[in-house]
Length: 70
Image 1 (cartoon, rainbow, N blue to C red):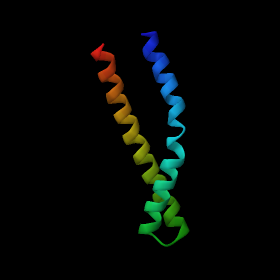
Image 2: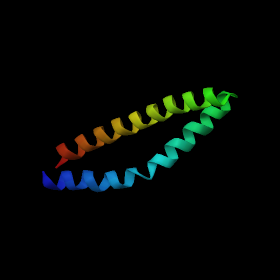
Image 3: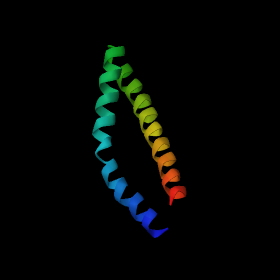
């Protein structure tokens, strides 16, 4: 059980690399849809939350599969 916690903690360190990627993807995607800065920022926030939630869900599923596989 301790090894799973250690793996989760070490993999969270790599998640910091996802932050600039999420921000840049959401800003570019929003800028292609809107012209006003206010609209771009609002849409980028929603998109970033959606992307982060999806990544967290996939991480959770993979973590559960790893836990039951061993």
